[in-house]
Length: 297
Ligand code: SIN
Image: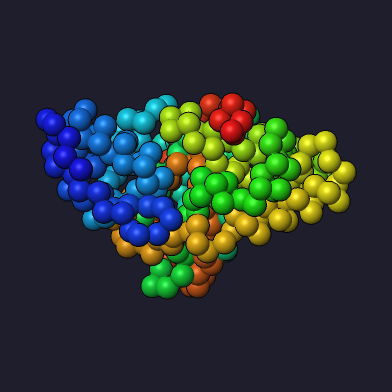
């Protein structure tokens, strides 16, 4: 993609349902306005962008992320961090321990399909994840296109969710760990967390996406619990089809950013004796909404 007045950037779609590589950008330097606009346009088109061979310290990562908007504070952790964090907008994702104390989140576990912080009333519009250390195998991150999942839903499933909202449980993280200060949920109807429309209209592209958040303790408001479970199981069976997904195999220096409004992601487990260290930051967002007029036809 050539944008007048900008440095050249090349966008290379990876041929899967989402994601593209951006080549020709050094994110440790400020991007001029036209180059930034080209990156942003590519993000809206491809949903997930990967920039390889970057050398970013935390201030540089935060400076690039801030071009997209104000940043969120890191989410509530399941474990304590070993270090005082000088950058509250950076979440350390790592299995590394120092003196027996974890320096980050999620450990070496598998993380289930989810959308970041969807249990909040206002959810981040996007997340950026930068790799500092990667294991020799495992720890790949999968991304899934929720526009495509919505657009290919069987008609009766689409009809069943129009106008419906879902509870997004905040008690556990995507590795299934109970967050600090939360109690075990025994009935999804009573779970703590925000309610959001199951069909979500993207405020920039105006396209509709399936918005499921995460499966555990989800509940479709207004349905008997067994009907909610049945509908959620059918929606998840569709949304987690491999044809909507692409997997990132990490190299040190990769920065991957994804649009939380139209994607989900998950992570493979990896050998706990190897090291994985990532820094993540999130761009603040608005309350998810559904534009009913957009599916009237
Ligand atoms: C996450 O943000 O869910 C973690 C992804 C990863 O560690 O690859």
